[in-house]
Amino acid sequence: MEAETLRERLQENGELMVNVSDFDAQIELHLHDTEIEEDTVTLELVDGTLEFDTDEVIGAWKHYHSLEDYSLD
Image (cartoon, rainbow, N blue to C red):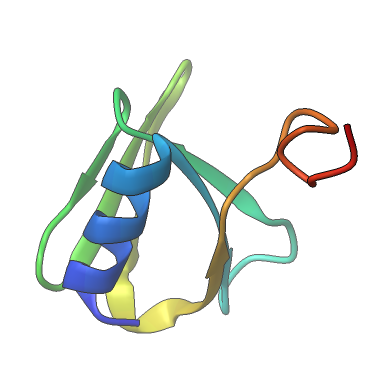
């Protein structure tokens, strides 16, 4: 996925869920702990740093928290 697309979506929503081809689990990105460069995404975790290539991101979507977010209120 293009780095600019990821940055725009993260900036717009404040957080973003992504699927990365190298990982079985989805990854949650936040503005305060994520840096997106042209070729890499760096995520600062409590116990270390996770880094992966932007090309490895195969899906991204807004992370919902409430019924209102799903338009179900």
